Amino acid sequence: MKYLCLVYLEQKKLGALSKGDYDALVDEARSYDEELRKSGHHIVSDTLQPAETATTVRIHNGKASASDGPVAGTMGQLGAFVLINARDLNDAIRVASKIPPARLGCVEVRPIKDLSG
Image (cartoon, rainbow, N blue to C red; front, side, top):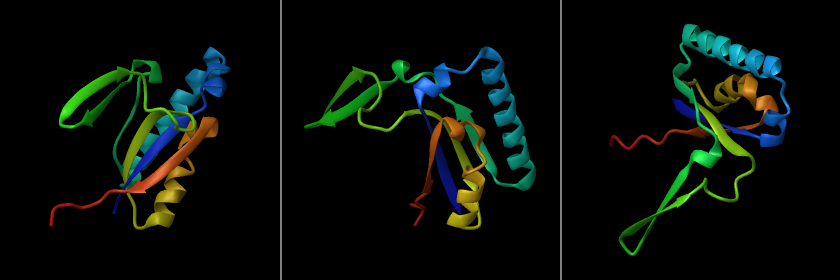
């Protein structure tokens, strides 16, 4: 099964990291991605630009409107994602629990819905 791991970061914790600690976290995340590739779990992953760069699009009565900023009301800011293959939810949780930036927030694990019929 495919699972999307959404990595939410607490900006205060991220901002409090020294350059050295931030660089170490990035290196650790890259190493973990490589570990996931070797184990067959990894499909794709990436880091997002800061939430301030987001644009939220809404459709009302068939018309689109766009506003600056992320969707309000989330705990932390969506900072990265990892799409994985996993045997089941327990395997996906095990993989998600080792995503290094999760120490600065949390990871939402959500199964991918197959719409292929």
